[in-house]
Image (cartoon, rainbow, N blue to C red):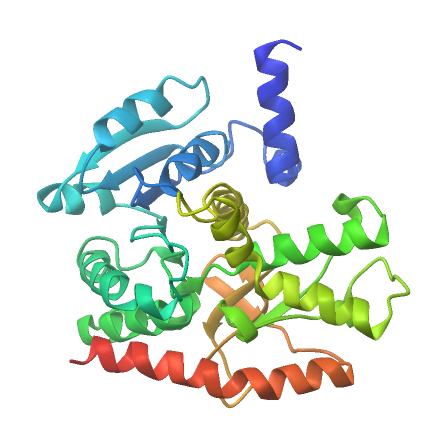
Length: 342
């Protein structure tokens, strides 16, 4: 297969080609995407995947070190976007200026034995600084938060934006797409159906028991026992730990997370460009439960969140899971708010 054919195949499978039906290549709007933490384990493959996305016209790669090399490497790929690399705090403003979508995978990865809470102090400080810069240089951008723990970093970002007077709850997203990707993969494997046909909503948060896949709503329907559902739920919740342990201390879920981040960013870009019926799960400010932030299906549009969709009918097992996750998720949200207001 020639390289151009391979590239087309990758782009079609990743981004589903919807934009090609919605716009001719000449009519696709110019969109700048900034990746903060672009030289890291998630950032590099994410930069590659965003370079493959035909909706991106300018790709801005930022990190505290090593970004020029990543940018040079990615810039040689023969796709639409112009790539620029920025390094160090003095270039952060330049990296962000004019961005339509900002993706934040910056931070340290999990290591064996490390809980998501262990990541908190380091990553919370990084997120705080980056969000202060976003508020200053691109206050209208859609912000896609990948930095863990997402259950706390999204509330931190919200508080920083409130202080700056730029907060728009429709434009701040916690990227929980990896939970959906895993749930689809594990479900399809167990049901022995093509994974491309599978859909599984995942609600709650983005850590451990706060991740609640709604397998009762999965399509196509499969006849699973209660034990099967419990095992699939547990595996989805423990997916990150599974990868950390398999990499034996040499990394975390970087490649699958980059893929998930690219899928969600693509959905945001389609929404901005007016593609109808773009629905993804995301951790956003929400009133569908008593918690101030919650992950559920969200319809994306020209202003970010167009509609937050309800939970739909839950099985008894899922109702139990929902009640069980609330105290932990509430605690993580409050931890983030408290950190931001110190």
